[in-house]
Image (cartoon, rainbow, N blue to C red; front, side, top):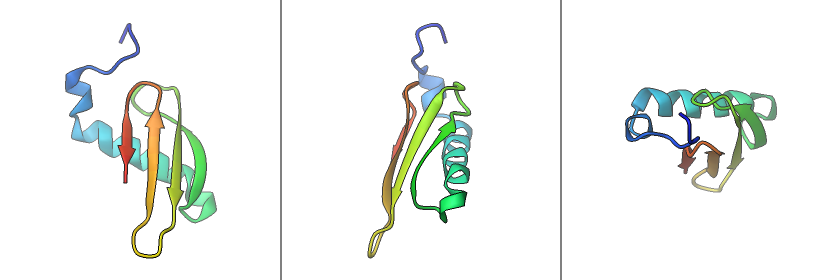
Length: 73
C-alpha cells in the first residue's frame, strides 16, 4: 500500500475487520474492557487507538487507525 490508504478489497474484508476489532479488545483486557488503549493495527502495523465507554444500556466507543480502518459502536 504505497499511499497508506486501504484498497476497496481491504475495506470490505470481514476477516480484516474481525482481526482489527479483536486486537483492539485484547488491548483493553487489563482495564476490564473499558477505557482507552493503543494497539498495533493488524492491517497496516501502525499504532491504532480504542476508546470504549460503559453506558447504562449500551456500551459505545471508537476504534481508529491512521490507515483508514475505523469502527464506531
